[in-house]
Amino acid sequence: MTSVGRRSALLWALAAGVSSAAGCAPSRTAPIGAGGQGPLARTAPYLPFDVTWMIRPKHGRKYLGVSFAGGATTGGVLDAWAGKAGKAPNLLSYRLAWGDRFPADGTLAVWKRRILPYLVWEPWRTALRDIAAGRDDAYIRRTAQAVRDLNVPLALGFAPQMNADRYPWGTRKASPEEFVGAWRHLHDLFQDTGVSNVIWVWSPSAADPVPAGRLRSYYPGDAYADWLGLVGYYTRSGPRTFDTVFGPTIEKARTFTRNPVLVAETAAEPGAREPADIRDLVRGVTTRQDVVGFVWSDADQRTGRRPDRRIDSSPEALAAFRRGVADPRFGFDVRRP
Image (tube, rainbow, N blue to C red; front, side, top):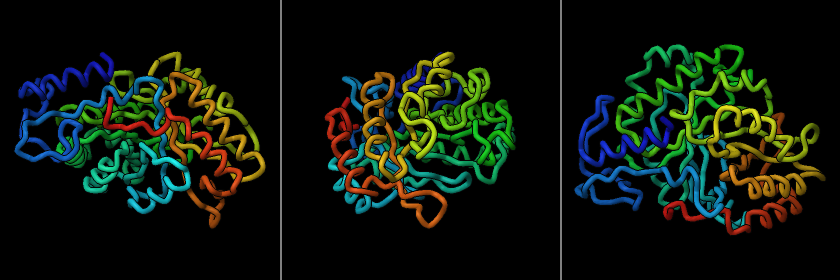
């Protein structure tokens, strides 16, 4: 069964007010964002949010995403970015360290702005094998309950770039089997808690290519993932086009999944090539039917080893970005199927 099929079965059980053998939560009064119609009175009938249509938006519509440093950001920051881009984003990526509390208020604030929240959950201090073995089940269930009760759509990526060696959940400290075990255990606990409002984002690094079989060994299966969320950047040297930055990983992934692609983290380094890189990114996202959008990492990291990747790092880059995302397919209303 695919992830969509499992979600449909869960939604039926929730809407019918029954508890399945897997432990689905029974129907109850509405949480603060029930049914995808915005905040409702808590006494309204409970309508679990169905994110199925958001996984493959109709009519070729694309997500225009952005991320900043840290957690969910303020409205002022989003307004300023939208003013520069010429269009408001409809997806916001932010991070949560494993063990920290789910930011329900911040997530709801994002959704109220007609933006899909995308939470990247990073297990910095906990081994994947311990998660798979159930050591943190109480924490996972608390988080799942908070996500369920908020009842607004949430894209969720766990332990991104697992096929790279630079993170504690990566290739140096965890095996593919440990990653898959942790992912499935996490997913199953969310399912058992009655969570229907999550888009699961499996997010390998496109900058760390591995053989197709090796990449597949990290994949938890179509029953456990909805999006292929690729992480890759346009750099001053190396791959220069969408097809060379992301194409090889997409081609390998297509040997085991047909899930839609979200470019889950990307940007271009400043310099003479940056406007052309931005144009190429937009071209790649808009011309490929299996790509549902991109997330621009809008970070000024000149104080460290990384460059200024903000969309306005130069007038030429900003002009290229504004022209690209002016395409009406970007930034659709995430509240309307």
